[in-house]
Length: 336
Image (cartoon, rainbow, N blue to C red; front, side, top):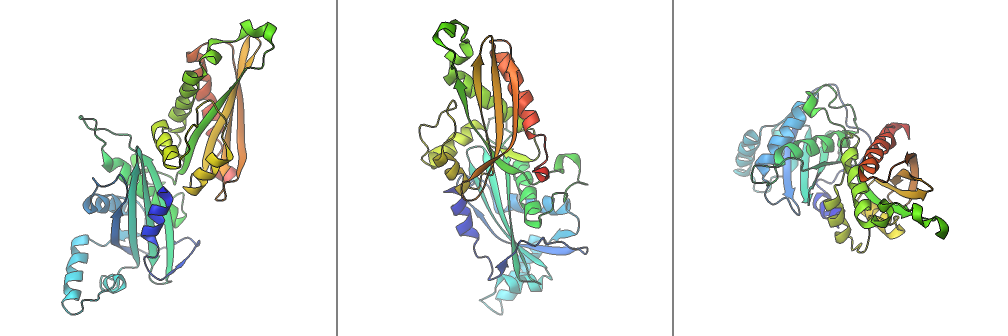
């Protein structure tokens, strides 16, 4: 499972307790980078790329500075001349660092995940953060351009570890990110309960539910991907996620199952969109719901929106879907 690959790699980095208390301060704190691990899909990345991304993440966060890696490495070499059993705490103390950071980076299809653990030496507590971002950029040869995504995911992981949503509010616009909760777009049920005598009213949209349900899900993703509060899985990555969870047979026109939701909970997906398109006489109604998934696989609805289609048109369906998705995600997470 994707989650457990990361967790096993990060626990423990030091024999420190876990803590939910934010790591906040007014003075400058020096951060030293420890072990960097690259999980599934991230083999083309390097320590250098992550160090650069982490340095950017710290530079736009007030009161944090990265200990230069060349200085850290020279300290390690010097310490090992006198003691072959040098610990990370020894290195941090010699560099006058306050925090040790370790990271694990993985990529599933088009979604990057950065797991970051910060060990505060002074209070001997660990703080864990997770950041996600889609590989939205491509080179001329269509290969992914990893750097922008790595920076954003790292920023989100750092802000998440600090429990500080406003950490980057004063950064340049392109770097003004928020911790983003992972979100999956699920099935949109197509319902046609018209009596037989009214069957001539059935729209083509319902006759082609396999194709059109995918179109609805894609429209939801396109709109949800614009939200800074969510890291929305694209449909290809979602399907790869389902394959990894052995959730075969899940269709875009079927409602979610308890097995599907439980599987998503295990890999820390926090939000889920589902809904239904219902045939009415001379119209259709689209209803979308946003659910929160807890760690035990339970779900509860936090928002619901509805809209009416008056035309049997895929363009009209796309338009209504995007409008409703925007309404669905407008409430801020802290207002739940």
